[in-house]
Image (cartoon, rainbow, N blue to C red; front, side):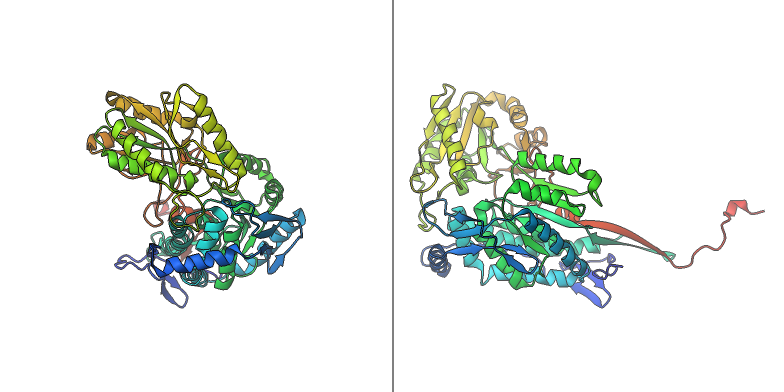
Amino acid sequence: MLAYFTYIYAENNLRNKKTKNIMGKGFFHVPPAENEPIKSYAPGTPEREEVLLTYKDLYNQKVDVPLYIGDKEVRTNNTSSIHPPHDHQHNLGVYHLAEKKNIEDSIEAALEARKEWANLPWEQRAAVFLKAAELIAGPYRQKMNAATMIGQSKNIFQAEIDSACEIVDFIRFNVEYMTQIYDEQPESDSSAWNRVEHRPLEGFVYAITPFNFTAIAGNLPASAALMGNVTIWKPSDSQMLSAKVLMDVFQEAGVPAGVINMVMGDPEMITDTVLASPDFAGIHFTGSTTVFKNIWAKIGANIHNYKTYPRIVGETGGKDFIMAHPSANPKEVSTAIARGAFEFQGQKCSAASRCYMPKSLWPEIKEQLVADVKSFKMGSPENMENFINAVIHEGSFDKLAKYIDQAKKDKDAEIIVGGNYDKSKGYFVEPTVIVTTDPKYTTMETELFGPVVTIYVYEDDKYEETLHVVDNTSAYALTGAIFSKDRYAASLATDILQNAAGNFYINDKCTGAVVGRQPFGGARNSGTNDKAGSKLNLLRWVSPRLIKETFVPATDYRYPFMGE
């Protein structure tokens, strides 16, 4: 019997916000989850001064990021250097690269840790992660923000939303969702008691996280761990500073050694070693579609080696859209494009990258959009006048430059603002707006993951026809938005585009999902749509067991109809 969880049953009249659960020694109420308030960092605010001081301090340090395997910090002395994208000649330190033996050791450490962690009472696990949330919201807040600003080139407001508020929200709401899952129980009667316990997966979970959101990097291993699992976490090589701070937080919060192991190095070697283990029980992934499909194929090829069928959870790419109806407000549309396409240099899975504008509104939308983009300031995130910072690395820069150069040559494309780039000091790409006469133009279909948006102008009387174009243009289905004052038009778009986006927005930009309000995820080639920041995601990291206890068992095999 797993001691971490004694039987939980649903109460018929749950009247308050606090979810009630039963343990052997009491009904425990977790603190009600609330979204962490976003600080403004306006001139003169104390948080602005604090983060700038922390930024300067971190920028002038030399970090040494080890592998975290069990209770050991492992330094292989095979290292790679860390550079801020906006100043790529500046050396921030190094991180250590794993060998195959290190990955095997991390699996062993995780499985050893599982013996106690899986059996720990749920409220003890909850307490560990609630402490982690408070550490991030409080004493670690500006260190998290500064590390994200420096290592991922995010401006302070984008960093605050991500590395402070969203990761705190993930943890707080996941704890509340965990108690709700435990509280939902089957019906019983006086003759028998039916109950369900939610066991951690039998084995370990492999978490692969991207550079663009520190919150995702923290949530993917932590959400599985919260449910009693142990994890092997491979963060992005382009996110080492904030990954190190996350591990510092987890350790201070009391996450036991071996529950979250952090490894870096050759991604193929790490993945192949992990997937070769018979104890591999699941993957929690955010990254590219191609990588995810390759991992899925490898899991399939190894399926006969595993003790259980692994859980495969992934959020991948997007080619997200904004569609405007002729009834839309032009200013609202232009602002949605400016923010939705260019916040964090368009390096969001949800970023607007293809837009469909009605001919009647386009001149006004164009004028406002061009003016907004020209007003953007670009440079280091340390200068808080800058809205735009650098793209993440040279590979991204070169890819974006190639597509911009091609658009300059193509007859069916026109760059109306932006179009310049420079990597002499940092990987800076101007926010670029392309207008095309071809709804299937390459940048309408290809995920670029950068500050480039492409716009197609349609005839007003072809609104419905264009909705079908939107639906059929991309293999992705992550986010999308419709702007309309006409409710019938909005309803039509909601129907036609029902499979085109897992997160669909009416009169809002297609970015900015908030934990506890808009669970995030997409379908088609955008992922398994398991909705990070919801109960749906947590349910993937447990294996339910039904227990029926009969109080007075039968003593006669005969049925009533067999009587004389």
